[in-house]
Length: 394
View 1 (cartoon, rainbow, N blue to C red):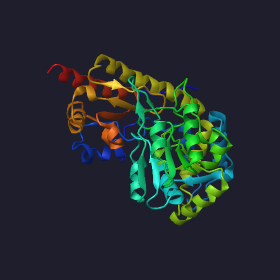
View 2: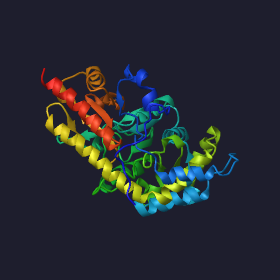
View 3: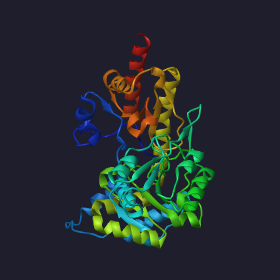
View 4: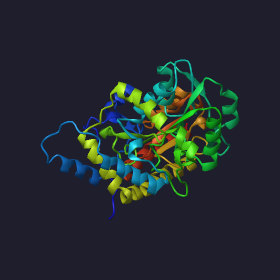
């Protein structure tokens, strides 16, 4: 079976967040939004068909999260990523951010330290601050060619007895890294030495590009399994963010019981009946679709790469190994962060995420979501090219 990503259904009138918030975020509706991390690509038919099938039953009452759905995810993770979870390890969650907040509450106390590795998805540091924990920043290192890595020496120098939790983004949003086994093992060793629990956000794990291979943190060793809480889900992989369904895997019973105490207080419940069937169908039927999606996404990235190569003094594209989020180094344009944002909004008419929102290490950068149809990606390229040509001609 072949799938087409040439065009996609219009979302302007569908209450899609990236469109309804344009005026509030960018001061105008005259922007093509390429910011929030969902896709302007149709959710696959095998997910939609599962929802239609469920609607044949006219009662939409409370339902428990089905064991069969967790089993479908467990089998997927074992086959695709080599990590083994059991059904009793699994919790339903409506989002990774909700899971992360529950983990912060469960495994640290007010005033204790939580490690984040910036630049990173903003809820990582906002969640820590909102829970009155101390934010311990361990910024990533950036090489001359734009590739990021862990700063192990910096991490070692900052950890003390108050450090209780590390929030790992793997693959990394926004810098697009797939962490190598040896890199993760360095993090593991430090966390084992200091009794630090690891919350591993692996929501983008299925969106890595060959030859890169995602390594689940819990798969490193039995000791790694014992300190790891893994956040997973279908939202990014199959464009199902609107289903509000994800999962948390905790193999260690002591950690699982501690997480469950907070989980029950919050009352996560079990999600929607449509999330249940969509989740299960995605994992059972999605392999071929995902393979073709990644070919398409890689093609979109290469279009952006070619554009950046034509304007090397203005834009440098960070090498990508996973995700559909391009991390653009715009420092060559010589603009302050507000001026940079204005360039994209007012001149290119594109709505991107400002790099500064990912931490001060993101100053001078912008994040562009290239998970769009080929038609829309061509439009993005045309608008950005025109703005860059105009600026170069000044």
